[in-house]
Length: 405
Image (tube, rainbow, N blue to C red):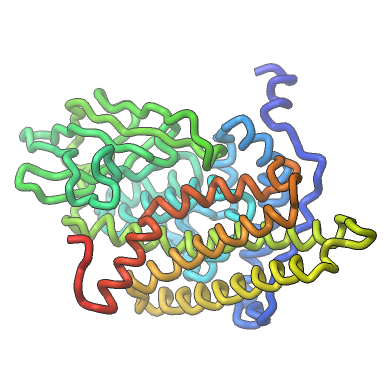
């Protein structure tokens, strides 16, 4: 690549990242010094490595693959997993803070990190053999390898139990056939944790490596959302998977659902990071934009918008912090995680839309982050459990009646 081309791919924005996080209820007082150090490091990273470039990346639908190794360097991959495997050994509040700061930069960047940690590394650690942990986790933690998670299929999204991807026991190996779609990281992934049915119809996880014959990862083009993230398919045509690549620790749909709980927890924090960025941008813009001889922040309707944004952010911050404490104690339930994921994403979407109005016409340009966040959140509200599915998970908990079976 020429120096000129490289400069184009890494075009910096001239707009400085002056972000300041809102903390109306002194939630910082609930954080440890370690939590604050994690946040400071992540925030500095976002301001240095993401904010100057993200608008250009999003405009051109460019995934900066070099960010993967940089995420590894700051410990963004699998931060709660043991240090023995090259991970951080941090608690769930730290994990949430990391996801919040990264998604404040961009949801696509957070998707890259949370898929790697929660959907690839977590199942290998939780359900894998010690040999599998030692082989894969250090390289994934460092960013040497990128991973993806294969659950969603063309005809089975909210109903993953209907999957048709399958594998057969061929004696000395398994033969894998099927396809997955809407898979974050897949076009660049070195490994994929794939969920498929055996001949008895039981769901198992298998580790599929790039280079295995019959395994391809077509890229998805034309996205209006998560444009700085790479998305694609996983296609398996008589792929020979070594028997030692089967995750032995757990089978059944509960295994991938446990992974999704971990990822949804990260999304709950991450989406509020996007909301906080929209709020901070709107607050600054309202103070600077002069109409009718005074800043628009002086008008009642703008103050109403900002006050409601701050209120909803504060409520979500407290919800996420309490959920993080429950996660640390091993007491968080799937419905509790669903509530937080759904609330955070819904809140972030509403705040993005109100912030767009405060910015007026400028809100639709790449000069400000609002429209990018808004488009990204339209994916976040759908993946890893749609808004409606999370309502039904909670409804099932309340009534004892599953509405989706």
